[in-house]
View (cartoon, rainbow, N blue to C red):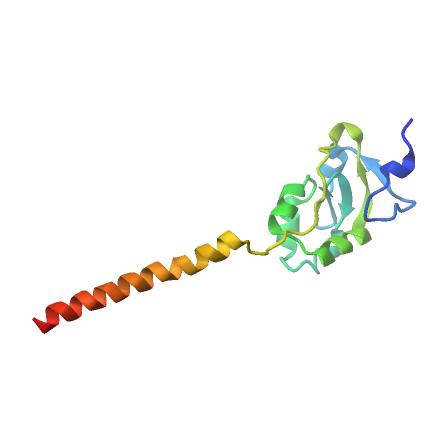
Length: 143
C-alpha cells in the first residue's frame, strides 16, 4: 500500500476536504457557477478566481472542466501564480486518469550567448548593406 505522505501535493498542504476526482467528474464543472480544471494531475476549483484572472474569465471558461496543464504551461505563469494555486486546490485526479506531468516551475526567459550573438548580427547585416548602398550611390553621383 502506498504511503499517503508520498501522494500529497508538492507545493500545497493537503486540505481535509481534498478528494480524488475522475476526469468525467471534473468535466461536469465547466461553467461560471462551478469551474474546475486539472493542472499537473491536481484539481482546482477556480470559480471564485474567474473575476480576478488577469487574462479575463473567458480564458478560464474555455478550459473549464478539462486538463489544462499544457495551456497553463504554454502561457508561462509566474511563481506568484503558481503559489496562488494552493488557494484553489480541491483534490487530485484518480490514478487511471493521471498524465503524470511534472511542474517544472515558471519558464526562464534568459537569453543565452548564442541568442545575444544573433541579436547583434540581426542589425549588423542591414547596417552594412545600407553603408554599401550609400557608397555605391555616392560613386555614381560623382561621375
